[in-house]
Length: 262
Image 1 (cartoon, rainbow, N blue to C red):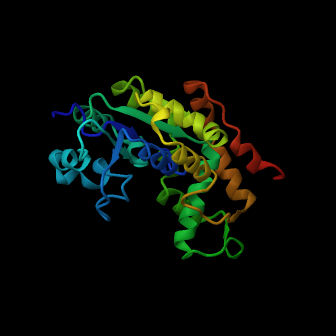
Image 2 (cartoon, helix red, strand yellow):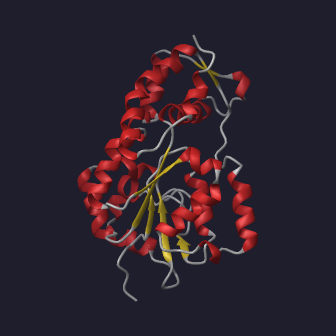
């Protein structure tokens, strides 16, 4: 059986926005297939990282990796770093996946940036407990922002425009809506991909709902100084406004982070 796409369903981010949960939920559908984990070449069975880590391996490598063991299944590649691929890279993706369905979960830029910094702080501190580490403003903080690529991951409006040039039906979801009603969000994604929610066994539906309440990659809630948080707020404000205008979505998560700050 010939295949139109190498990957049939792509999720391009954003980081820290329930992409791992969505991959887990989509993998439970009998009409989908997740590639085997070949760590460190891939990241679990979720992220193929073709255009950032593995391009040197060639298109045939990606085709073989993504081909389901059973014809008729839709293959999954959920790699958040794809969100900020350049236009020529997205065009290359289109040649390999001309009919793919592409999903982009976006999160309040301030909340996503802080979540990413906490994750990088956990790595840098060798898993310090929440009460033993504090994020403070300074040169080390700015360096960590660059290492976490918080500006690239949070540049939603530009990312959306680049991807929509090749995939006009790009599905954009709000993390806050997905977290509030995971099954409704899953149904939206499945419908977008031409898959029926009813095909998921009832026991799996209950397990998926329960797992949505857990953070799969949990990081300690490190405190952050007011100066550092205000810096992130100012640096992400314009992107929040542009993205809300671009998508019609509304972000609220970050507002709670600023309460009580002078």
